[in-house]
Length: 223
Image (cartoon, rainbow, N blue to C red; front, side, top):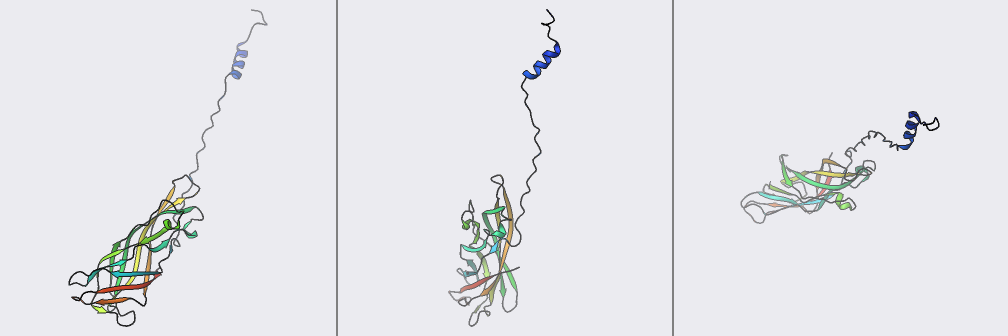
């Protein structure tokens, strides 16, 4: 082999370096986890209970007890508000209403008794409709005690009157601008007091049928 024909090992190595394709593998940078928004503050939801009718079912035979019912579909809270949006990061997609607690007050003694009722459910797959972001109830409070008496004049002389109503709820809020399906679940409670309105009826006398109680009220938000 002549000197012109000689090829050094260095030349071979140099040529090989150009002939082999280079695949650059970038090390994956650690993804910074986006912080999940917190549940909205105390101003969410917006209470919307302005009026509610509470009326008795059939009195148990020879007793002063009957169920006290709230009409199904009564709206109590709205989650589709700016205060519930977490600065534009959240949107209510599902509201589930849990138990409700009704407190009755005896006018003469001031004694209070709490009754727990299971409510209906307000639910939806999307918040595109405001109805899916509303908490609605249809509660029945069993075996409420109604002492004998009549509402003869005024509205404060009924033997027992509704004092407050507290409703528990769980709201699921979609996290906007994040991976689909990312949600925040927030439990809470809204409470209302009552003012009796003209038209309320109270007529209870054990052993006399029918006994009738119907409270027409306005709801007042309690702190």
